[in-house]
Image (cartoon, rainbow, N blue to C red; front, side, top):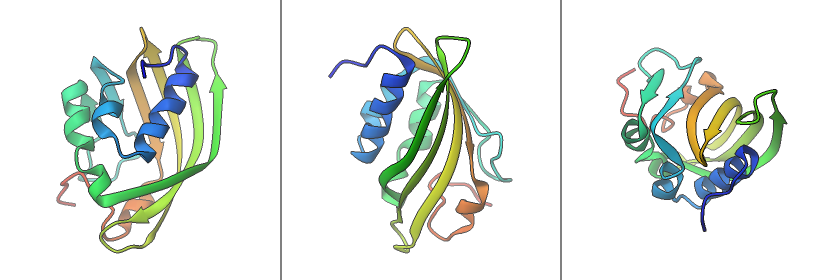
Length: 141
């Protein structure tokens, strides 16, 4: 499937890829110089990833640690910039290592240009990563 055209369609498609654990296809949605930021990241976790390769490295082991099952809450808001959306969502699943439930809320500000993600600011809940098995980034926190 070719990448959807609108930022909303592309974002919905990206969530399907995450649920399918197709991380290479998810990374392919990114522009080569795309930037992913985590303003609420706790100490020891990355706050900014610059470039598609850095995003790929960050996400490489995600499915080995976090098994997403659904996004039961998903609200996508248009902004005055047609290339930027604001997303409110909740992801649920389990932590692979401990089989503990995962329930995380997010707000994301995503910009898509020429059918590729160029900017993704992920305001995820840092309290969730205090659970054993939640750290897929290789941090030494």
